[in-house]
View 1 (cartoon, helix red, strand yellow):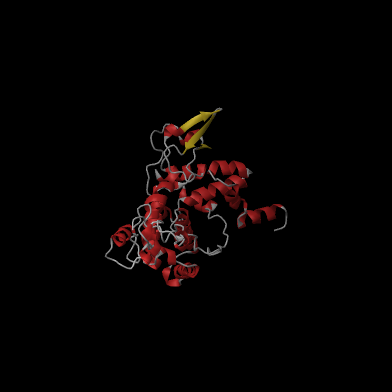
View 2 (spheres, rainbow, N blue to C red):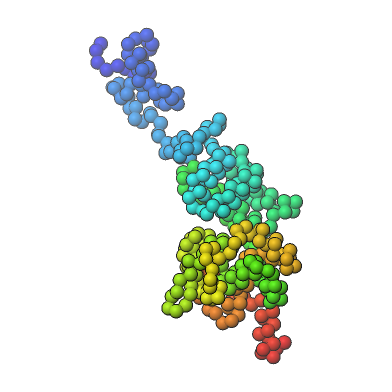
Length: 345
């Protein structure tokens, strides 16, 4: 009989021509419905109803994406594989070089060490809670602030995995980050400042410049004499032209003329904060000195002298005034002085 070839289920003779045609047109996957072989040409069969519904693509069934390759168990990428992709593409395009190096250390030394071989889709909230407990164990010697940074990077990583379609939702639990005890800014006392300023040059000039401008160390090492511009009869230091700013914004900071008079090129000769800190501590005996303390000391002195929070926010380059408000909390010495002025101490 001529006409359409019957479906595979209605054909009992596998040697016939119609069987050959059905066999040639059947799908390669063994999970498909057997009636698909006739391609809808067999009368009396509703192949659309018998065909299994097509699954929507997910992170587990759509195969490798954006350069990630499946492992032996299928399309479940390990945490280490996905984290490498996160570092190479997301971190490399959204963070400064220093922060990129820190993110890689955090992945290799902590996240990868704890759950690197685990398939990404199998990471659970309890596993991330166990990760926090592993970081907080006493023998690890990790400070609470560092634990917050490590968990924040983990949260960013899993959010990225969701955005890229590798996960349907993030397993990172709510309220996993530890709440840190608020501390007053770690500023230098007046006695410590006096001892620091007895140091020889060029250390002394670097300290004076940091205490007078409140710049971050990364900003201090980038400023040059040509970045000083006059505005309405006053000198301002344009910060951010050479990079180094945390917010990646350019701002202007008032500066005294005597600090830049006769200077050319880079204002300070130092680059490495650790080397500078060790040298200052050894020469002055102020063993708790860190370069960032110059910024804290400037901010506290600015407010104690009557400066406003919005002005300090602009000088320091904070995106949010809430960050600046931490300097408005009086130190113990300032509070005692206020009490003494009121006759209460």
